[in-house]
Length: 182
Image 1 (cartoon, one colour):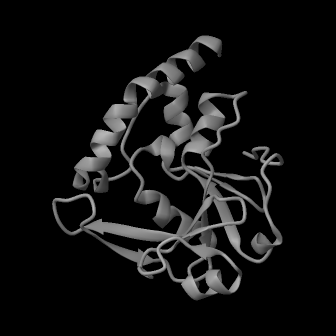
Image 2: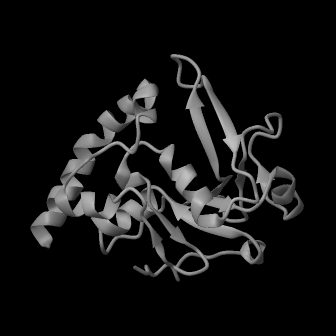
Image 3: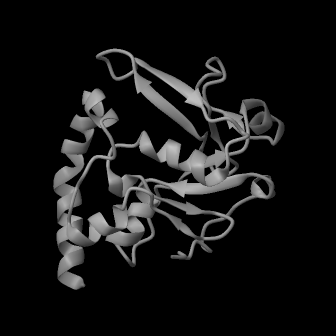
């Protein structure tokens, strides 16, 4: 499935890096068909931290090189694909591994999306092709009004659980409205 992302601007920095729009923007494309979400987060694959710096991206946490998150020229977050594993009971107690630049784009993207909370937030749109990447069936869950977690990693992070519980009433309302207008 191809989605129209023509209204989103990208600088030439993105010409040589595999990039995907992830999370809320993609989810909202299916929940709110006619509303453009301002929540645009990007994931890049095939690069490392130094590559991003060399391309002119601004490292958000310059004192913490293990966190591969940057800002682009439009103020959007751009993260290198990564995996995370809980190492304790607190929200910030986790190990993070940047996905090797040698891993193919789709495989790296799937690994990154697996660390996300819900299937409806674990979808991506490839910036170069406009193709939807939905390895955990988030679109199907939206159509069926289901809210499912992606993996057991969600249960490791109680903070993320509480954030989702806080957002749940709004999300249920959006899903309900979508079903009424379908």
